[in-house]
Length: 318
Image (cartoon, rainbow, N blue to C red; front, side, top):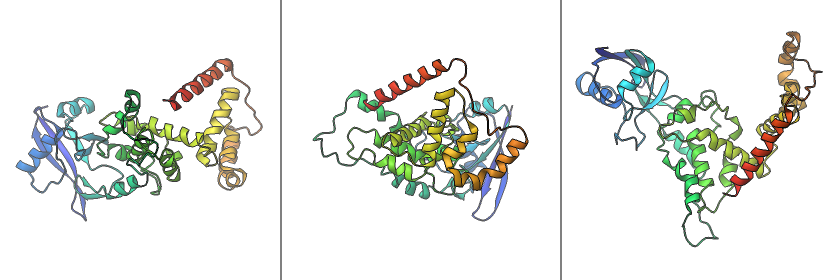
């Protein structure tokens, strides 16, 4: 490839269109290419950048439908990954577009406030010393640069009604919930729970696309476990989790007939699921009278449960 085509989604506040720019192939970052386009071809092209060292998080964009930090992403890496000489650039998903590749983060800032993303006074401590183990718990989540890549990739946010917290807010909740210097443990778990903690669909995109490799999906799972440990078991999400847990422990299989009933209750299931259930029965894909028997090797499954419970208890004491 001697030249590369950049097909960039443009927006002027009213109209959306795609515009192509051609650059000779050379060793450069994506941000370097955008800068060259603006300086040499089109000074009206808008994008944001600042540090150029993957610290500020301001330059994240979508390339061929995937979020990247423009300043640290090499052009050669993109061409090798997508096996093409045309790159499609768009602003991040799930955020209001201001102009071209620039998005508005104001709404995300308000979401962050909901989880009290700061240290609160610990009345029982007179210093802020931490052990190596205590620091290790918050070291990785503290790397977040709030670039918005996880927000863009979140499949739940793409269809949410605005009540679900973005992954970066969940990361903040986890980071301060695990901080040994904080005096409000449990407060952020409840805040996440009140903002649909159980809506996460475990697509893992927030984790795989994070430029700092923060395991956000694991952090969300921890917040869920803490909510259950605190006795918050009455939500649909908690009942759904317990249904899975109990079925697999009992037989090694999921009883799909009973899952909706135990999750949503008799009345809601009857109102929302009856037509679907009738179609499933008619198609032979569900037998409401079938009760799964334990699978072969169920004892091994139960040993995994016991091991998981031991690990969970050890984690609580870290």
